[in-house]
Image (cartoon, rainbow, N blue to C red; front, side, top):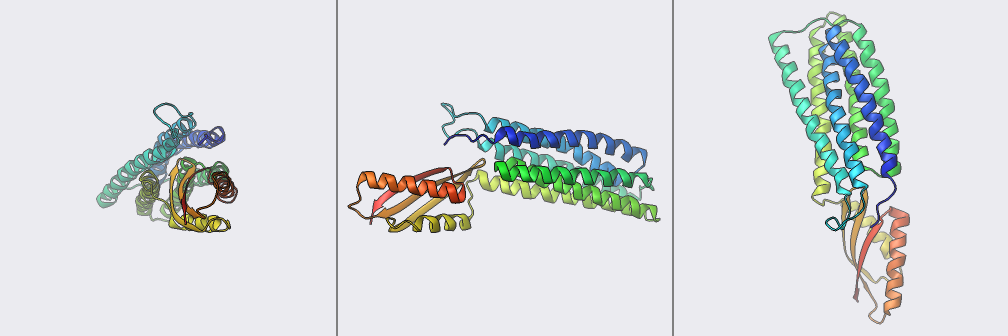
Length: 287
């Protein structure tokens, strides 16, 4: 399996995320303290960890693009999934910190009335992060980068978190200052929830989990070949942005080696054209 040329394009998404998070984290932490908004401050701390997570994604995509070597005959594509896993653990850590810190303030009644201008900071941040989300999602679809797809989920969560922070400040402006702290807790919950989803997706792929519905679609495609009498087994797994299949089919026993080889090539081309499966190993057995 050859490495595709997607990494340079996917790296653009990671760079955009890192740049956006660097700028927004500084602005939110500064204005969160200045305007005394716990929700905006929690959002800012979330973005500081997003910088680390985005750097992990960047490194993962770059390492995944390295060619095969003597110790990595299948290449380094799984580094994308590992980087997504690392990013999720960082997100979980910051979510837990923000949750317990805000919960402690709420129980102790330690909350201030934030300046309404904090809402402007949070809302503008939400618009920016939604734009970054759309950019990375489209890029992830084009490049089939799993790490970038995870990053786009994080971007969308951050946009929603900033909307929550905006509402928190507005509630406080209408004489409900405790709502700013409550929404900081909600923000922490959203961070943890998104991180767990990314973590589960990454561990599922690293443990060679594979969706049954994809196997069914591959079997339907292979069954269309007249010389294939039976599809006996299909095993699939993800290797970074690649899908690898091991297929066992049954054919007539008098099929020549040349004809069997030609059939395998045709099946591989069809799977690549219809399902973007670029690595297939086919074992042939007589019916």
